[in-house]
Image (cartoon, rainbow, N blue to C red; front, side):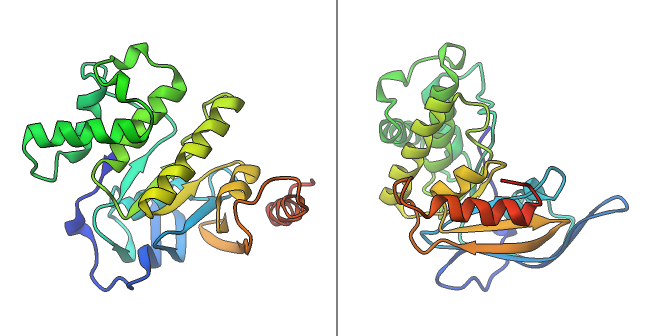
Length: 250
């Protein structure tokens, strides 16, 4: 499911170049200290990837930024209402594709006709203009994820939060969805935080890769030449650096 959080939960004071940030955030689940004095910023028009081992707190960072988890200390600062897309599209099976996408506008107060018109435009943006009346059960995994992205983007967020959105897709569909994400990002200019377990995906898409360890940022990799074609000598070097930080032999 794609969710949008209420902008009223935002803390004022966002920098002009920031789509969203956390400042000195601590969070516990019971006695478990999940995030420790965490500060992270996603710039406007930037793609940042967050990687780390299972249990490092990646999804918690995303949920706090999205406003879906509020029992933390520190500050959350976002520009407008961020949108979130998860690994599973979680479309409403009783709604057709058009009304699933229009659901992303439920907090905007738009008239129904305008909301449906904007949903149709969002579907056109992801190449699904001809599937507006389809039911979710008729869609492949890749098509359902396209609908999920359309629902995330229909409200024109300044910050898009993605929690392993391509992890359940086959390799070819995953590459197609990465290309679609980049096309939409170039067109709309939103900031992106991509949570992923895939180091290669992080290197392929991001301007910066953040490595989370025990609820804190352990390493930041700045990619000065992001989104270059593979095989030009940089990918292996970046990949090796990240795997070494994660304690994985390449």
